[in-house]
Image (cartoon, rainbow, N blue to C red; front, side, top):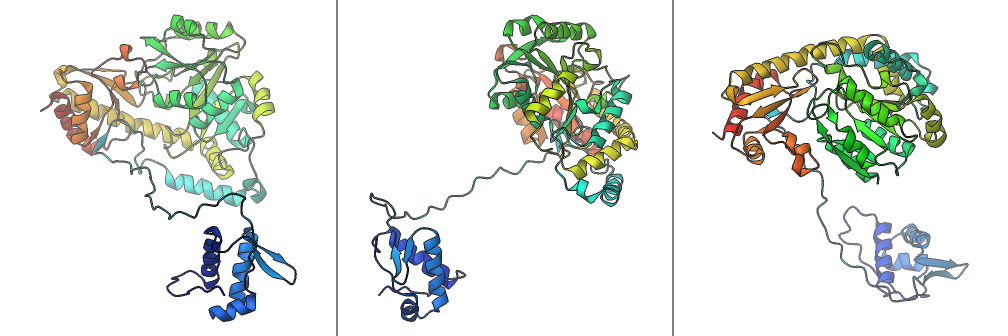
Length: 469
């Protein structure tokens, strides 16, 4: 009769141990196909365990297809397959590869973050509490529309009218969990066969998203006013994705003449559209915000996209599209089956944050904060060892500026030195697709995540990295 040892089974239950022993014998063909197993009672007596232990092990093996039963005759081994079954190989323990922890730097001139004391946590928590106390519980627990809840879309519509001079209907707005998700939505809406043009240099993650969505991507070179229209026309692309109010990374603000050129380009093809990415429009630190391309579009060719990740915090994965009216119907007919990707609770809280004026106050406070950081950083640079060897540009348009340095060191050498000095830097040369167009020795200085007290030391380390001292 079969027998198995129950010593040293650790935390495993007795029935699980018996189940595994029998299963292994079947796989290794120690128990042959059609062979009858001992009755539950006699097997339990032989093993010195309860009948329930044997019954539970047999039941699991039957459920998985290793055994079968015949009424009043007992349990038999199943035929697993016609050919030879290889014995189970010993399991190799391999370490699970996980994403390495993100490094923190003494000063980070690349990443975006918000100082923890700048976010209005107390107000947000109060609004969240008001939402949970005042809203219908059923509404809070219901799937939201693919476009987002009506309250938030109405609040965004009013905000855009007051801040950006855009007259749009709430129905034109589609709320989603981050711009990366919305880029994919637009690809599904407009089609993968169109050909998408992006800026070169530009936001590298955008290019990767388009490429991973199997669309042909054209990297169009730029001049001082933005993408070169002739190069766009020559590419054959039908969708143009641009950042006209504050190009990343050059900081260029597209002049109105170039904007009208692109609107004219879009009007010449039924399937031509412009995606206007207005990612940090709230943080123009000098003068009024630049009017949007969407606000001067009379042909319904501009799709506007923006995010609250910059204005609130990167962790807020809430972004939105403004679709031309004729695309709204297409969106709900083709993509309306999607559920909303932002929780109803977050949407309702943000709607109140906007409609009650807290967002405007927060933006004003953040502008003052960022202006202070920028002025402090520029002041330290202008009195540093780099003062006579740098050219500063585009310092008013958003949360980064360009710092062109006069140095004999290569960009790669400076980056290596910066790493050793616990600085995170980026050069504009890193954002080009076409190597022949790359500009060297131009740093992209994102100051949104700096701590004011560290700026003097950060600039001192920057000088050492650039000058090699």
